Length: 252
Image (cartoon, rainbow, N blue to C red; front, side, top):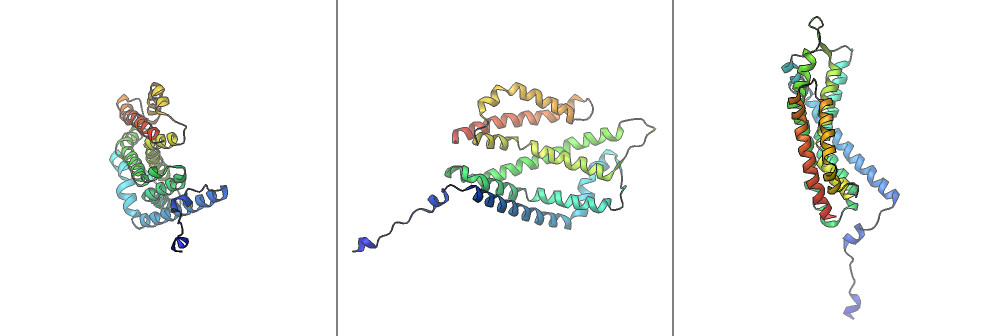
């Protein structure tokens, strides 16, 4: 009979919905880390090709504009500096891949319709980080370096070690980039049930106070204008995070 030859093919999605074991999760995590490292290495190699441009035209520009004098105090200080710039630059270039691997790792915890937005989430996460880095480079660093160069007695010449200067530049830019990931962090915490928009609205005043205290510590000197310049986007990010948390809550 023809009817006896009919076979039923199960949808592939049901197989993907099968719950993974702990060892399978570890294996998946291992491969996601490997893919991220491959992207970082590729980005670092590309940055190494243009490392002279990155150092001279980008990273040393805030020092020149602020009147900061730099010097190298270690025999291989500049070589190690170039390696550091290439690695950090490679990490920034490979951010879309890193974010993609992270979201693919947690995608089994998302619903089918939510997985369709992974590309948009990766793009938005990368954009937030780059905006934070740009904010630090164009707004925070000039005022910080100018204050550091002009502070103190006129009898003491401020000359900075190049490794200390680069540590400040890179740490401020990366830190600002991470702070600007607040909307995506709220999305993730809401998805796993730790954060709710009601909680964020309830403690909005506390958050604003903490933001201004953080701005006072991160901003050099006692200039209230600089503190407001730093605090204003952080308050805006908090409000955006509430909206994103509300959106993520509806989709849960």
